[in-house]
Image (cartoon, rainbow, N blue to C red; front, side, top):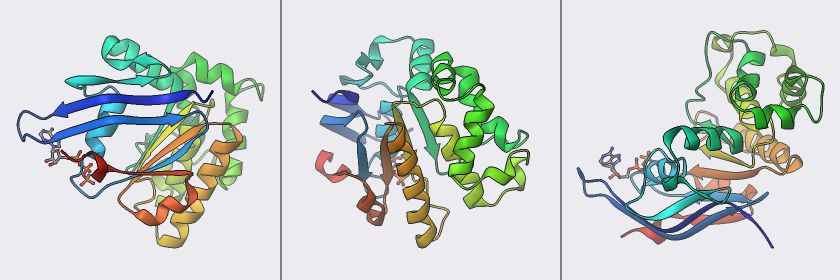
Length: 227
Ligand SMILES: Nc1ncnc2c1ncn2[C@@H]1O[C@H](COP(=O)(O)OP(=O)(O)OP(=O)(O)O)[C@@H](O)[C@H]1O
């Protein structure tokens, strides 16, 4: 049986201020899955991602991560579950500018014992694992460099290595290629998906750009859930 990493069931969420409402009867990401979630601007992608991360809680239904209902967890339990099982890759990268490339990539292993112990299955130190990941993403010559001195495309690959380290069960990538030109978008996505496939990490790719769907196994559209 395929196991869901992430599952939304009968989800209903409404912002009191604007009245925008999202209803998601059923959505799931399975182990090793690659799902492309597309939607126009304002269709509720960020809202759904916040629900999936437990940052927003639904008024009805639930989101489960690794079989655990996020609405039943305390904020600290939710944070711990998220860092253990999910790597995030955002449009703005969220890298720490005062840290080196290597320090940024090893960060999740400082916050998650699980990610650290997974990383240490394939090498003696988390730094060695970070170097392997950075090399596979073509960033092996930039290890000690402060991230503030890198190009946008290079920062994107550092952020990808950070999301991948310690074999999380899922990577949530929100418009991760928006700062790249079309050729580099496909190339970056291929690197990310190849690496994720090697370590059996599922990827949920959220974007308004349908060209990115080609490399994913499944495709879902926000329009199906519009109230
Ligand atoms: N904090 C909030 N309070 C009230 N309404 C909100 C809030 N955040 C978003 N909305 C509304 O919810 C709707 C969906 O917004 P959301 O940011 O989830 O869409 P999106 O698909 O991520 O858009 P984009 O692609 O432009 O980032 C919009 O109509 C927006 O005005």
